Length: 368
Ligand SMILES: *[C@@H]1O[C@H](CO)[C@@H](O)[C@H](O)[C@H]1NC(C)=O
Ligand SMILES: *[C@@H]1O[C@H](CO)[C@@H](O)[C@H](O)[C@H]1NC(C)=O
Ligand SMILES: *[C@@H]1O[C@H](CO)[C@@H](O)[C@H](O)[C@H]1NC(C)=O
Image 1 (cartoon, rainbow, N blue to C red):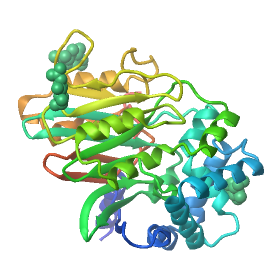
Image 2: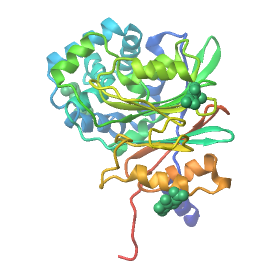
Image 3: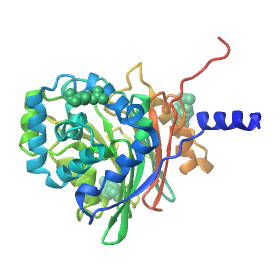
C-alpha cells in the first residue's frame, strides 16, 4: 500500500498532467462561453493557488506601470471595437465575482502580450517544430511561461458551430478570450511565439489599441470563426493583419509544403519562411524550428533551443519521421524546460490533436 502511494506520487510528479476538456458553443451567448472554465478552476484549486498567484506574478511585471487611466482606455477600446469579446470578458468577470477582478483588469489581460512587449518584459518562451512526413506535417508546440501556478489554468476546448465541432485549442490564456495554440479541422494548426523585435512605447500602443488593433490572441479566433478555410488564406491574413507587438505565427496546413513561419513586427515587415522557400541556398526543408529569435540569425549563446532541436531533427531515423520523433525532440531539455506548461502535437492532415500538461524539468547531474 505504502509502495503504491509512493509510485503514485512519483507518477504524478514526473508523468504528464491531465488537462480538462470543455466544449464552447460559438452560437451560444458570448457571456456564458468561458464561465464553466472559470468555475472549474476555482472549484478545483481555489482562487489563491491558481489565478491569484498567476495574476499577482504578472501584476509585478507586465501590469506594473499601468495607471487607472490606461485601464480605462483598454476597457473602452475592447467595448467599442470587440463587442463579442467584451461580452465574453463580462461573463468571465461575473464568474470570478471578486472586486479585484474587474472588466478593466481583464481588458488589460486581453492585451497581455502587447503590453509586455511595450514594457520590455523579458519572457523566454515556447518552441515550435514543423516536420514534413508522408502523413502530413507534424506540428509540435511547447508553451513555456511563469509562474508554476499557470499550469493549473491550462484547459482544452472543443469549439462547436452550427452543431458541428470545428476545432480545438489548448491554453492557459483562454481567460483573456484569446488563444496561442489553435487547431481548425481540415484547415490549419496554429501557434504564436514571443518575438524580440521593435516595440511600441506604451502611449503609442494604447493609441493603436484605441484605434481598434487586434490582440494577438484574437487572430486565431478570427481564423477559427471566419470563412478562412485553407492554408493560403490563413497565411495571407496572418501576414497582413495589423499587429501591435512582435510575434511569430507558426502554421501548418493539410497539403505538401503547407508549413510557414510568419515573423511579425509592429513597424517592420519580413518575408515568410516556407518549406520550399528557404532563402538559405536549399530549396526544400524537411523541418523548421522556431523559438523566440529570428531564424535568419544564429541562436544567442544562452538559449540554444532551436539549434539543439534542429540537430535532433536532422538525426531522426526514418522510423521516427512521425509524431514520436517530434515528441522525443520537443520533450528534450532545454526544449522542454522549467517553464513548460503544456505540449501539443498536431497534424491537421490527419485531424490528430494531441495535448497534455507538462511539469517543469531541470537537468540534474548526479556526478557532481
Ligand atoms: C492585480 O492588479 C490589479 C490592478 O491593479 C489589482 O486590482 C489586483 O488586486 C491585483 N491582483 C493580484 C492577485 O495581485
Ligand atoms: C511552395 O509550396 C506552396 C504550398 O504548397 C505552394 O503554394 C507554392 O507554389 C510552392 N512554391 C514553389 C516556389 O514551389
Ligand atoms: C546530428 O547532430 C549533430 C549534433 O549532435 C550535428 O552536429 C549534426 O549536424 C546532425 N546531423 C545532421 C545530418 O545534420
